[in-house]
Image 1 (cartoon, rainbow, N blue to C red):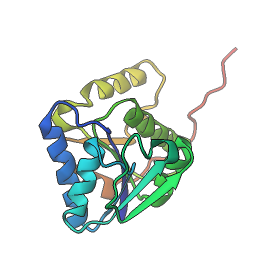
Image 2 (cartoon, rainbow, N blue to C red):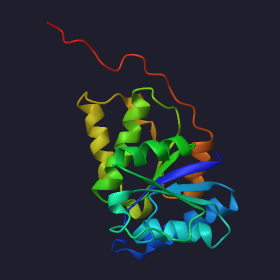
Image 3 (cartoon, rainbow, N blue to C red):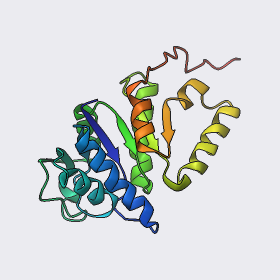
Image 4 (tube, one colour):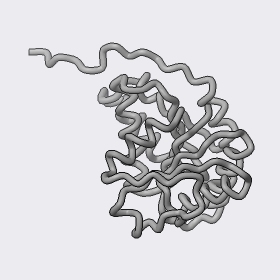
Length: 193
């Protein structure tokens, strides 16, 4: 894996341990020679992961839409900053540049990015690994909800398992490196009449 896109908050959140883990993940990317692809901001967890990589000689590519360039306060010290017009172009470019995806804690934007990339995988548009760094159990309720979707018959277990998870970024990266996508051929059923 030469490059990984990270989805995370433009806020720091209330738990300093989450911010520390974001910086550590950036540092780990630099040490492992993995290019960080992310949203291009210098604030929040986005800024922490970028700084963690940059301060350790890592390569960091930011992708930011024009209208967010001032709101999210783009990072001036990146290896490369790509400015696009729309949020959809941002996700498409991040997808094109990366070999896999990791979600860290964040808000609606982080969840939207995570679930769109998972949906693309479910539809067979890519076979890249998707991981969630579940720092301090942040995503526990989300995974319970996904399990409920499976038990209620709205999500196939094989699709649920496309989202890898761990509390350890080292373990998560190992899972992603050994990920082998399962082919789920029949994911839409015709209505029975």
